[in-house]
Amino acid sequence: MTWVWANLDLIWDRTLDHLILSVPPIILSFVIALPLGWLANRFRISRGVILTASGLLYAIPSFPMFIVLPALVGTTLRSPLNLVIALTIYGVALMVRVVADGLASVDADVQRSAVAVGFSAWTNFWQVELPLSGPVLLAGLRVVAVSTVSLATVGAVIGAQSLGSLFTDGFQRGIQAEIITGIVATVLLALLLDGALVAAGRLALPWTRVRKDVKADARLRLPVEVTP
Image (cartoon, rainbow, N blue to C red; front, side):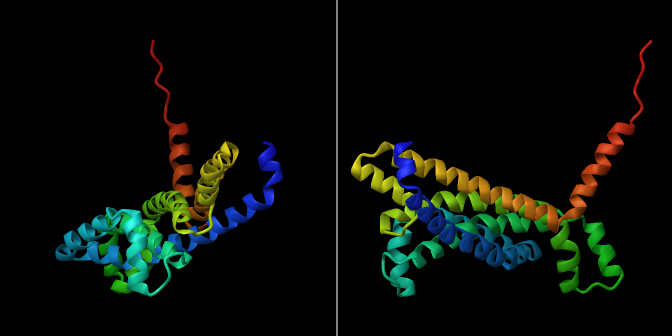
């Protein structure tokens, strides 16, 4: 604890660095995966290609990714942009299938009803498919958030400042408290982002709370079987 109290400023700075590296890839992966998942769900021919390609992206090891990206995007090896791009790619790889499965979970009768009342394909997506698939998308986004926070620590190896820097510095200097602090702080940050997504989901998807309340009320109203 002595090391922690003496280095609170360092821990706070590395936490902010980690947050800056993690949040953009989470948002970008959702935005990019949305149209890709829609295509995968909409057209059978494209589904296999898109989902297979996204799965292969996640199979790429992180270190080769960090080395290849600078040559592709024209950045330096130690640029934080490399890490943001790599984390976005991994996030998209996870999120595409979630989007496709979430949109596929929307009841076909509901979609046909929307078309029957005059909804265009665009309106149907934004006002019917996307809201109803919201709980599935939120669950997938929570997985992406936790995965991104975890993978961001690897960036310390290429010089990107984050909570992972506490791991590398702690190993090099033999300070166990620094290593443990980095691990605990990473877990707490992942939990914080997960809680923020849950709270945002409750605000953006209020009908899911109503549905749970209705189900709970229905269970309370079930007649109690009395045995003689």
